[in-house]
Length: 232
Image 1: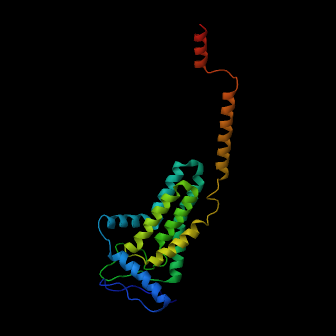
Image 2: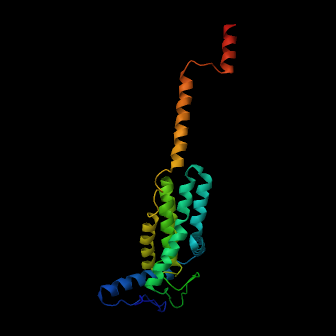
């Protein structure tokens, strides 16, 4: 299978544009990588990017978030746990696509990657795939937290070309693949039977509480004592 082009150029200048639409798209992809890898690398940004990249490795941060949600939210625990498995599962799908495409990771001379990878395969980015898939799944469980998880996923995606680990096109492909995978798990948006039963019981308890408060039933002891003192 034909392999996609690889950047192996000196840092003295950006890649050279080749003729045709494919040449332009390749030049755009490689130039974006070159700029992100050779510009704006200062502390503490470098350290923050490395930390984010490490957190996204093997979808570790997403597993932690999912398990924390399951522990803090017993009512939706089954949905949290189902969403927790989406990130690791997306990595398996991602690797199958990587093997099929066979694109090698980028290499810019004098600017080697700032992190390590388990394989030399690059397309699509596993970090982007697993992060967007997990953020999509978790956001379906907790819509009010959707903005936060998508911001985290976006930050992890940016680390890949910044650290020299992926072409920007690898990340874009990972985002699309992850968005699809995050929507494939059914019923993450819908309350489970257990949740509906809990809601039904809670609703009945609230109705009973309002009914007892409106009636002329016996008053609490404090009110009876106050009434007897008033009568005296």
